[in-house]
Image 1 (cartoon, rainbow, N blue to C red):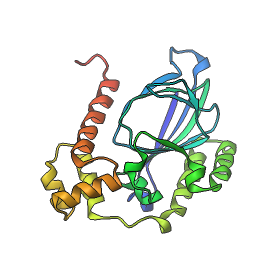
Image 2: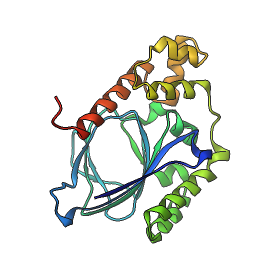
Image 3: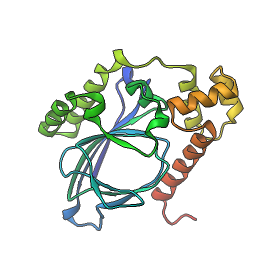
Length: 227
């Protein structure tokens, strides 16, 4: 299993948190399972799958094969992933409100949904995936991905004080008082809640709770024997 993390270009820092490239051959042994539980998280992802397609199973129904590139909206419900035999993926982790700024779609409409990125971002995704598949290294794949994201900068919705305030909430592991975060966003509590549904998909309290859960779950995964 190989996972390489890349810091965003300086110009991308306002809406991209990180880019990482995954290379996993489940046929190589080592006890890794291609079946993976994906838990709810405050993060938003744009994913590119370059080898075996990924299948997703929700709480009801069977596994459903996903497109080569998907946009993952706000998730409240756990799902199960089948990553195939040869899993190679580029995953873009967006900052709070980054997906809204990129797509212009109210995030409350995307809760527990994922979409073929071509339907939202256009056929340019096909060309990008083809070039990613031909790239010889993780570094080259990262460079292509970040070049594509840089090309989106002129079309981004403007950054708001709300976005910066919620980024501080993430950095604080979701532990800042909501009233204080609303004040940082220069909004009343009612305005703050409306803006949160639009740009994050959840109420501020639920989003903060998910940040805390994500941090705790990540710690548990890294130290599974810790009670």
